[in-house]
Length: 132
Image 1 (cartoon, helix red, strand yellow):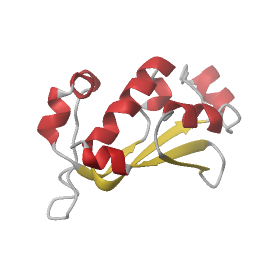
Image 2 (cartoon, helix red, strand yellow):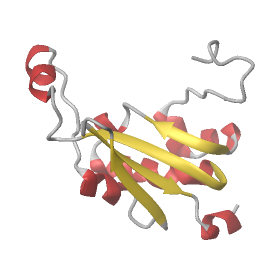
Image 3 (cartoon, helix red, strand yellow):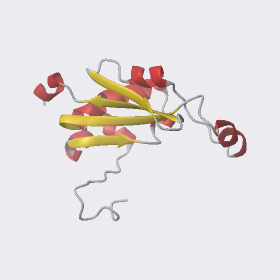
């Protein structure tokens, strides 16, 4: 991915979850306008997902946005994925994804056009801007 985006104003960061949660790795990475997580939260238990969601906004610049995607329980193709591919995920509905961001000032949630994935978009708030 980094090679494909070379020369563009995008910085791809591949960081381990353990390092991000420890905080030292997050501080070393800097701050971002957008943090997008696809295909991660589908494998995290609620407690770990909430912890990560509390840490990632600290890595946003003022007015930065965090976008989290998670497959929903009612999405199409779930049976095939679980039965034939032994691919099980932590599925969350819109309320559950919003609950991961409990305490965030600005949370918007929406679905993809096929209603297979729900997204939560968090915007860094004024209180977070003043604390960094």
